[in-house]
Length: 197
Length: 202
Figure 1 (cartoon, chains in turn yellow, purple):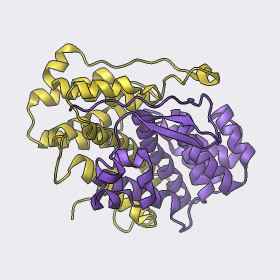
Figure 2 (tube, helix red, strand yellow):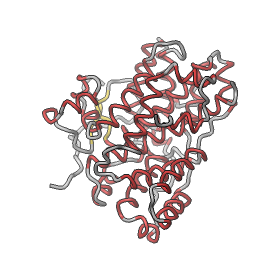
Figure 3 (tube, chains in turn purple, blue):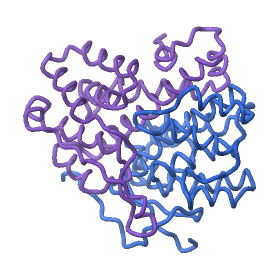
Figure 4 (tube, one colour):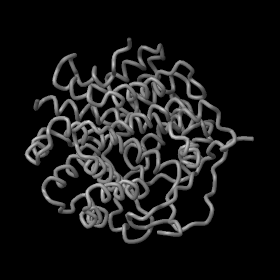
C-alpha cells in the first residue's frame, strides 16, 4: 500500500498518539490521501499532464515555505524525469513569486477599508520561455490563489483559457492548488501539535 | 468550440459579510444536469447536489470532487468526540472571514450560529473580522485558524497551548486544525470559480 503523504510529512509513527488521533477521523485521513492521488498522481491524467501536475505542486508548496512538504513535491518533480532546465525554472519561479498573504480587494463598499494591496504576479519572460505558456499561465493563477484569492475574477480564468487550458483542466488546476493549501496546513498544524503531546 | 467564460446574469453582489442565504454564480460552464453520468452522481455524493452549479462545475473532475467531499464530511460531521460541531463551523467561518470568502462565510456562520446559539458573537466575527472579542475559548479558536491560514503560516506551539488552556483536548485541537485547513481548500475554489449573489430573501 502506498504511504500516506500527510503521515509521512508529519512523521507519524504507527501506534503514536497522533496516529490514534488521525484514526478517529478515518475517512478524512483516507480521502485526503485519495485527493492527493486524484490530483497529483492519478492513474488517468486527462488534460493536465503528469509533469504539469508535479510542476504546479512543486510551485504551490514552494510558495508556502513549509520545507518538508515543498521538498517532497520538488523530489516528485525531479523523479518524473523532467529536464534540469525545467526543475531550475520551477525553483527560480518560486523564488520570484514568494510573498505573504492573504491580501486583496473586496467589492466596493463597507469592506473596502479592509482592502490590502499586494502584487499581481507575472512570470518573467526568460522563465516563461523555459516553462512554456501553459505552465507560466498556471503559475500566475496559482500565485493568485495562494496569496490573494479574493482578487480572483473572470479575466484570470480567461488567461488560462487563452494559454490552452480547457474548462475541465482549470477545475483540476484549481483543485490542485486548493487541495495543497489544505494539505500543507494539516501537515504544519499536526506537526506543531505532535511537538506538544 | 473553444471553452469560454460565462457572464453571470445581472445580480446584486453582496458587499458585506452576512449570515443571509446567498447564491453562487459560476464563471465557467458547469456540466449540464442531463449530462451527469453515474460516475458524476457518485462524485456528488448527495444526489441533491446535482442542483448546485458549483458542484456540477467541480464534477468535471469527479475523482477530485468525490475525495474532497468525503474529506469535508468527516472533518465537519464526524460525531465521535473532539471539537463540538459549532466550533468546527466557527473555525470554518473565521478562516473564510480571514481569506475574504463572503459566500463561504455566509454558509458557515449560519451553521456556527445555529449550533452554538451565539448569533451575536458570530455576527461580531463577520462585522469586525478575526480580531473581534468573542470570549477566550472562541478567540483561541479564531486565532489558531487565522495563524494557520496566513501564508507563510504563523501557527505555532503558543496556539496549541492557548487552545489547551481554553479546554480543548488533543482530538479537538486536531479538529480545529483540519477545519481551518479544509476552508483554505474550499475558500480558494469558491472565490476563484464564480461569485456570490444576493437572493430574494437576503
